Amino acid sequence: MSDGHSGGGCPAEGVGARRAFLRRAAGMTCAAVAAPGGVEAYAAQRAPGTESGTESCGEPGPVGPVPFHGVHQAGIGTPQQTCAGFVAFDVLVARRGELIHLLRTITERARVLVRGVRPKDEEVAAEPRRQDALTITLGVGSSLFDHRFGLAARRPRRLTRMPAFADDSLDPRACHGDLSLQVCALHPDAVVHVLRDLARETDGMLRPRWRFDGFHNPPRPSGGSRTFIGFKDGIVNPDTDSAAEMNRLVWVGPSAGEPAWATGGCYQVIRKIEFRVEAWDRVPLAAQERMIGRRKGTGAPLDGRRESDLPDYTADPHGEVIPLDAHIRLANPRTPQTEDSLILRRSYSYDGGFHPNGRLDLGLIFCCYQQDVERQFATMQRRLEGEPMAEFVTPIGGGYFFALPGVRDASDWLGSGLLTP
Image (spheres, rainbow, N blue to C red):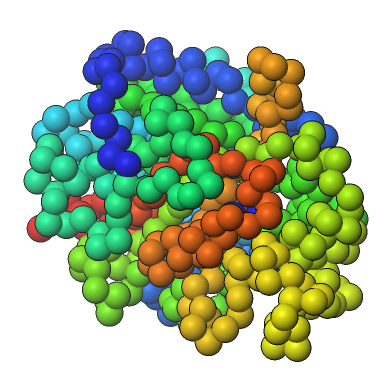
């Protein structure tokens, strides 16, 4: 499935902020039902022995420590891990120097944690270790560029408050934020321990705004992972092994018209999308497949045989095989005008249990990365407005963020280019 400003809220400070963070961290679950430098710069970010997730997020993820230093942050082009936590924060500090201290602190803790060493809390029995393939990815929201820190002139050109699209039903309590934190790992406890560590180290400096936890279903029987509507997800992605393609579609480069400090970063979109699975399960299989544009069993487009086959819309101009309003056709029309609109997806399923009315709370934490959020995600989302699938899926939260450039070496820190001359 493909598918502002962090604002007010009570100013919880100090111990209250920390307790709020810890209460949310304690609720993590990931075991519920059941990717501009050259090639060398990008390769330095991949763990040895990993495979690309180019065609399917069901491919094996990284199997060892993921390098922390590089032109780009890890957790974007990195092969997808099985568990993820997405958290947005409001920044509580009021001065630029304090914001620098906060980002330095996050960087130093992330640098330590991704190496798989024991956290400071010696009573923690199950700490992140090297086999967790941990990545910690930090983004900034448009609200960070308000009056507080004097950063308005340095705001990325396309970074805005995420709008409500036509089929959205956004909960303001689950939208936007000053900072976004994506934590991905092979095990759910590793994600939780990162949040616990950062809660302690940033005590009184951050207030959690919302949190979405997700997990990556294994391929069944092979290929792409399936979501809770039963179809394979994320079949088509940019080739994360191609520096040329990543530079064209994902990474902000010197010629993108962005502030110089933004080079090496990219735009992040996070959307929590709820599925109405009970209604979906009553839809006949043939109708489901026409809404999606793919076979449920194989993942192949309706005019193909294999998951990896590309749909041929030129041979089907009237939508007799793949309907004109099928999800895959609207999301990616495959025209010369849309060839630069492909997004890099890193989505995860979620299971929230039951709603008070007894309805299952299942869905997708949609996450994507791109060079230009307006040209890519927003334009795609407007094409999807009113699609037949909209009757069964509802975006209810999330936000737009800018994933900061990478930390180049041991003396660098996340946001250094943004906050220093």
